Length: 122
Image (cartoon, rainbow, N blue to C red):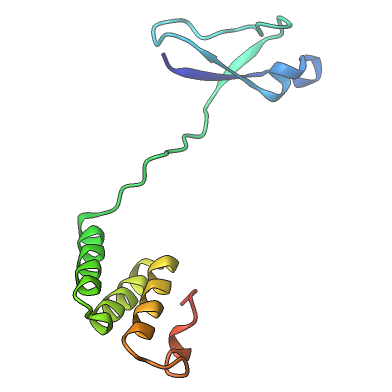
C-alpha cells in the first residue's frame, strides 16, 4: 500500500498532527482524506519528496571503476592513478580523486609532484 501525506488547509486551526503534516497508508483506489483523523480539521493531500535509496551508476562509470581495479590488481599503479584521476575530473567524484592520489603514491610519485593533484574540488 502506498503512503500518502496530508497537511491542514488552515494551520492556525489545526492540531499538531495535521499542522505539521502526517502520513497514512491508503489503497490506490481509496478516496483522498478530507478531514484530519485526529481533530477533524480540513486537510489536503500534499506532494511529497521522493528520496531514492537506490543509486545506479552508468555502465561506462562501472566499466572505468572495473578497469581501475584491474590495474590495481596487476600492480599497474600509475595506469590506475591516471585513469582514476581523469575520470574523477569528469565526474567530480571525490572518492575517486582520493583513490587516484593513493595510487600515484603507490606508483612512486613523491608528495611534492602530487601537489597539483591534491585539490579534491577541481
